[in-house]
Length: 418
Image 1 (tube, rainbow, N blue to C red):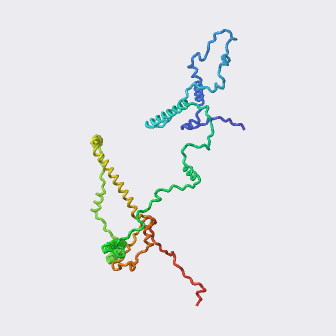
Image 2 (image 1 turned 180 degrees about the horizontal axis):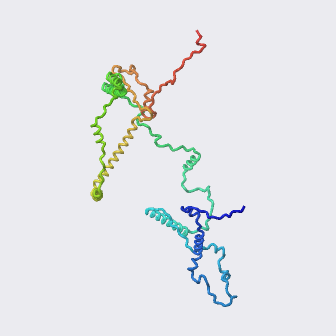
Image 3 (image 1 turned 120 degrees about the vertical axis):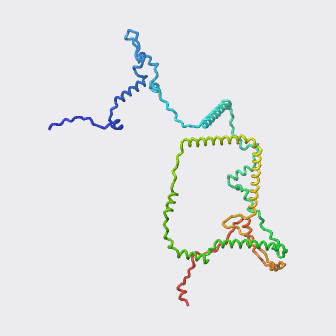
């Protein structure tokens, strides 16, 4: 069987896209031409533009034996190959890329220039000092005598404090408020003269009046709290209203349909008026009005600034009044801080409650110390005094409450016992 001759057909490809065009088009001739141009630029330009002196030289001697060899003549004057490699081989000037600096404001540039100038001055001064300073070549180096008496005034206390700091024996510095009392109230208050076992009538009545006002105040607060927490559920009017609301549930489900007039009114109210566009003349007039107003405001501000010169007296008066106000504010603050030292502060969860006044009624006064009725407790009085003077926080006695009830069980041995 004869072998069929196979033709080498050229592959047909699409060149309708840039990618396929680049892939299947032969650009070798173009690349060779560009490479030739690059070599010509590196060697001093194209041959057609070079002068004759660069391409040929004139030989004037007839003897062919005396023709000098340009490659070997004066070979010892040529630079070495190792140095020749380092020289630039291209005649094309290297392109200089512009430095892509970010935009820096003029103020930053000025600051940078001032900083550079100051650094240059410092360097110059430092070099001048180094050059003017005489070298100390013949300097005698000697070890100091540690046992020699030093004439400097060194106190013994400094060595003691240093030793205590190193050995951690020195006590830390105690702050000034450590010794300050939390309150300026006296530890034992002088009782009212009406609390005596044989008081005067007026003083005793004054003490009774004070106790009465305190008791009325407490009673008023209790009543106010009861009124706030009271709910009048058992009143007949409230019960009647509740009964009516329960019995009338489900009767008001039918709602009357709105009439046609109401529907039309609702539609009219929901109608939105279309926005009227402004004409060019109207916009121009508004713009002129705004510019005129801005100009008048600037002129007014300028006039006001010019007249500030004539307000020196009033400005001084305002400054003096503000200084007086600040002084008065400082005095009030000092008085407030001083007043805090004479009243109990909120130290914990509970507020301080004043102790009830210890007094005897008019019928209980006997006139003798032996038969007087004992009222109050010394321990409670001291405890309240500590709370009032901010030494301990106010506390309330907590009652012990069981979470679960106790269970009672009968043992078998006790159950059968009779």
